[in-house]
Image 1 (cartoon, helix red, strand yellow):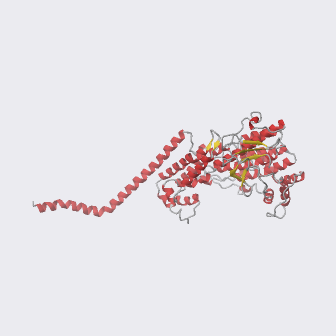
Image 2 (cartoon, one colour; image 1 turned 90 degrees about the vertical axis):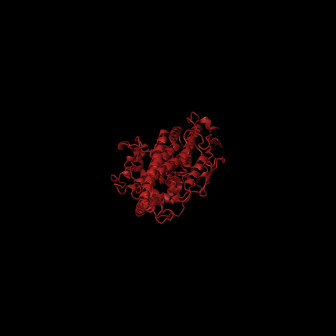
Image 3 (cartoon, rainbow, N blue to C red; image 1 turned 135 degrees about the vertical axis):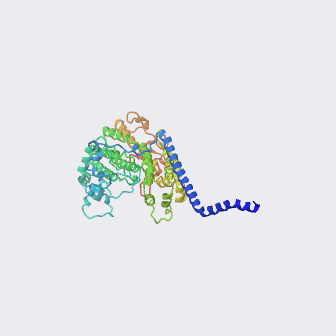
Length: 535
């Protein structure tokens, strides 16, 4: 065979392969890209799930809980359950499997009996006296309340300020109590129901979207505390201290009726309810007997808002952090959910890529979102409340706020691609709860100490020169300042007057001067956190 023929023969297979490959090259490209995508998705799904499971195993070994069931309080038999008293039970009587009320008027059941109170409350405007107590701005103006109740059935004058009280008379207190008579049956029912051993409002924790669980009871309980606050102060004004004590104890019971709920906002409302109870407690100083003070002191010492908030934070991670991400994972319309959960409308230019990205992203990326959200809890929020030393360190809280703020850096798309979109969306709303826990617990601590100081004064005719004199006869253990870890500052001004305070969030001793806003409202950030028996 000649060299030319030999070369042509050798070239035929090569030319044929080239033609064949050229004609099928797009198919090979599709197969290659598809293979790459499948491998990428498989790897990312494996990587995300594996990282999340390893983290959960490690943290579970340290005692952390991630299953919602670990935080949901067990059900209580109706006959043992305060929340199932007739005035409150309809709030959680839903059509089975839904959050539609059996009685469509259930959210407004207390509205009718509270109509007279609500009309009077709209008439009474807060004063602007110099604030001496962080939690109690001034005495309840019963004269204004009495006038408001007398006018509540007549023409509304919401913009007209009522004449401030210059004295409290029996007639004025009686007028206030008469204005609250429509609520007597409900309050008597609650007094009786408070003897039940347990309280558990039947929230629909099993709701598919955990962020959609209804909480209609919180506003009702707070409104009832507001009514009891006014009634207790009126009872004190006419020397009915036993009745006032019963109403205050009911307020404290209502404050604790939701203690087992694993929801952060519940505990923020509880601290507001406690503050309402402090008003009549303070106004009764000089009226309370030693036995009554001992009961109030014991009740106040039962509050542990730091532990409650710490547990609620862990529950928020499981129920409303990871729970929301799992809800998104289960959803068939992830794009719509992102707008719904983030509060961003479809016309928002920054948010529009999130829906398509979430739909196209590997499922493992949602596990990485859960991982990053949980690690942010560990790094930024858990250290802010130190239960072992009973401390809340403002510097750690400020560092937590800065760290959470960094999660929001970059564009929305960048946050999503770095698996911190949900952490950035869900964490900022709870970044200052440690401060609120410290403020609420300081309120309970100083009020309990106020009861102990009054008991000492009744026994000795004067105040002690130091808080250590109260231990152990008048209080088993003197609480310390949660901010500094040192003793609360106590300065007796006379045999009957004193100032007791924490240095507050600025960590500076401002001489017992509480922080306040221009409207004389309490300012948690500035000044001291003060209990003074002068207000």
